[in-house]
Length: 253
Image (tube, rainbow, N blue to C red):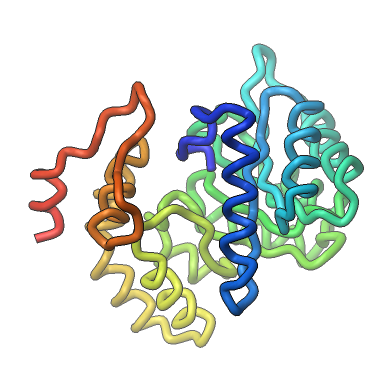
């Protein structure tokens, strides 16, 4: 994702990581699709990274536009996704809308248009504020003038900060970083069953941790992974600063 450490990895490390992820889930006993972020400042490079991910066994790629000196037109943004789809036949694309990091603002109508024109776009990771209103607007466009060309889901991102409100507007699940994904899974399961009281109770209970973990960078999340026994070391790549362990311990108390 845009807030991870992929932009601090070499091309060789990226390839090694994709191989490791695909190999790790091959024998897990259940379906576990690997989605690889392949966003790049250049369209040709984005296509090439997506092709590499597909060749290495990725089940999907996630692509978000990048900031240009002069804002790209709607047609240019739509063409970017079309080129990725053309270069990677049969590979689903997750359209990530995260203007906080990209400075690219896509209107709901543009997102609906891309999903309508590019069948490979199978998912929208919607992270532009206000997320509940944008989910509702996208659902309305899909139901009227711009239906998606294929089944297309909407997933909540932004660290699930607005999950309680997104779920009510018809998000299909979560695609976001959080050190306790089983909590997100429980929230989504309750929402899909329309058990709103339970969904909101879970959201309200864990919201302080969701907020704390959303500090810039991945240091806090890596330290939580270490405390859970999922990784041995919480090292973050320079120049990022490590998590403040005393502050984290206090927050978890």
